[in-house]
Length: 122
Image (cartoon, rainbow, N blue to C red; front, side, top):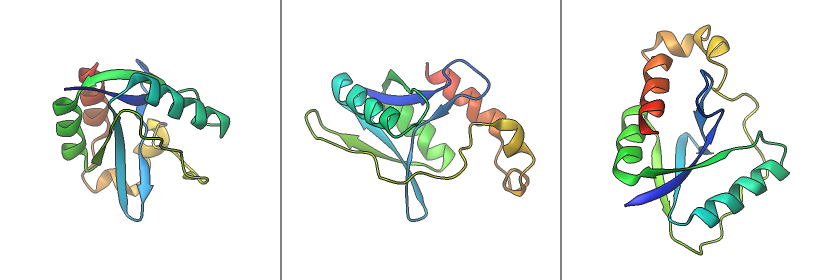
């Protein structure tokens, strides 16, 4: 099945996928409807997020990517209204240079691999 996800900085070295942080879990939303994904993207922009791109991806591919990267997925049926949380993380993982200097990378996370897998989804 094809689903829609939100990507930031598509095609750049700082490409990232939108996820929600709930407690200690990161969740990627997979929208059934392109219109619903676009509506969510507009709500993010209204909260001063950078403009996300709505991208169509095979659900099995995004689920495999998320499982490998340690993210969970949530399928959003067509017509289900989802609103972004009022708060957001202070620092995103989009800036690879800053992330590469953090201790988390030394704990086994390879950002270049994550970036390549995201690029392969497109």
